[in-house]
Image (cartoon, rainbow, N blue to C red; front, side):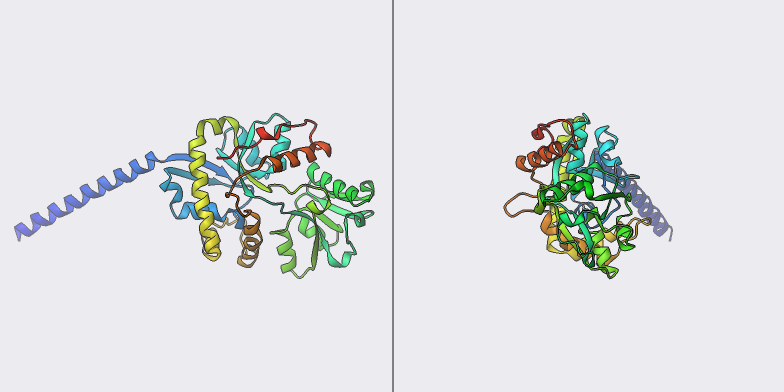
Length: 330
């Protein structure tokens, strides 16, 4: 009996020693990971699925990274915080990055997350709008941005209309309710994978005018950006980050339902998701996130030149930028 007691004590001691070693190994493993942070453009939704899949499946950890995913308090925060190094990476917009560079804010795009425009002029089918010229005399809601104003002006002018006759109405980010309740006749700045999906789910028949059909260049809607100084310091980690996201993206393409399940595991309580909406959103997004024969995230000089030139010619920016300095391919 005494021998059994002694043997039990020895086993317990061994277990405690091994547990201590395990904890130390775990702590050491965490310490070995390089920390990197990314701020989303908005609350977690379908467009971020690849990032959450990469995190949940351990692709970041396999790459030696400890990735912190943050949400912005304001849609203007991500780019500003990336510029000042408060976050390592941020998801932002191609046009916003170019506007910022024209103001000497040192940010650079490291990858294109969505290769094509998600923005469009949206309106109810019964409004009688057929083309941008029909916006003359009508109220167009927009979210307080000069880019949105320039989009409408360009499209109307390119359709032979008078942009001065359009009643631009600043509705902030209340784009969907302002259109639903007829406060405005059309909106710009709303996304085809979000506001349009929500409006149609609520029973509204929505039609749209695509930007590039009327002279506004197709743009990289969402890009991953870094401050120039951060990029120089953390180029290797940023490259590993994108490689892990690319693996996550491949998984989402192969099994979108599983990708959305991972996303919903990270749903923000303040912004609850609707599975039907996010499913349709992802169906719209996936074809717009890649082009055949082009590596995921790759950016082309022509796309940056066209958007930069349009912003300059539209008067949104006052500097004729060298767009080649606005992006890098990892």
